[in-house]
Length: 292
Ligand code: MG
Image 1 (cartoon, rainbow, N blue to C red):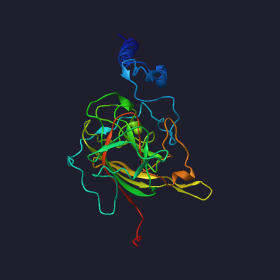
Image 2 (cartoon, rainbow, N blue to C red):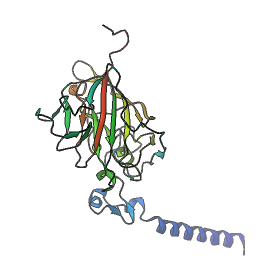
Image 3 (cartoon, helix red, strand yellow):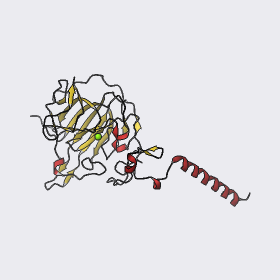
Image 4 (cartoon, rainbow, N blue to C red):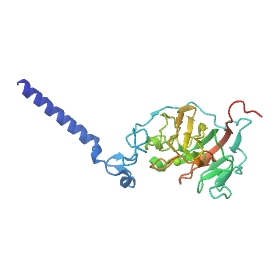
C-alpha cells in the first residue's frame, strides 16, 4: 500500500468513526428543532430539552438567554446545616419568623398576603407576594425547601424565586439531579448567569440563600449610572461574586433599566409548584459612618 492509499484508507476510517459518533450523539446543531415546539414533548429525540436556541444573545455575546448549550455548573456537596432555623441578627427585619405573622407581606394588588403559613413555615400560594417595605441596598437571608415528593422536570420542579426589589430574580428550583438551562437553575441570576457551582441539597431538605445586593443607580433623566450588583451564597457556598445584572429579570429577554428598578420590595414567586420558606430576614445596608 503506497502512502496515498494509506492516507485515503485512514481518512475513510476517520470519516466512518465521525459518522458513527454523530449518529450516537443525535442530531447536529443545524438539525435541532425549535425548543419551544419541543417543550410540550419534553424531549429532543432522546435528549431532554434543557433550554432554548432561538432566544436573543446575552449582551456579552457569549450565550443565548436560557441557552441549552451553556455548560452545567459543577456539583458541590454543601456542608451540614442546622435542622432548625438560626436566629436573625438583632437589627434585622424578620419577614418570615416563627410566629406565623405575614403582616410584612401583601399580594400584588395590595390585599392581605394569601399564602398559608403554619409553625413558622410559609408555603407558596396563588400569585406573588411582596413586602410592604421597599429596599435599596440590602442583605437578605432566605431558607427554602422544594417538595420532597419529586414531580415534574426542568423548570416545572420546585420553581419559585426571590425577587430583589421585586425585579431581579434569584431562582428557586429543585436542581438536585434536575437538569435545566443553566441560567435558570437554582440560585441562578435568572436568564443571565448560572450559579458558579450547583450547591443544591436534596428535595425536601432546607436550603439557604444569603444575598448581598447593591441597588442600581440611575442618573437624573433615567439613564443608568451603575447596574445592580449581587453576591449570593447558596448553602454557604459562593455562587455569584459581585456580579452585575444586565437589567431586570424577564423570560427569554433582558429588559432595560428604568427609574423604577432603583427601589422596591422583596417578592416571592408563585410558579405553580409548592415551595416552602422559613426564617427570612433582611437588613438594609446603609453604608459606612451611617450610625445615628
Ligand atoms: Mg422562578
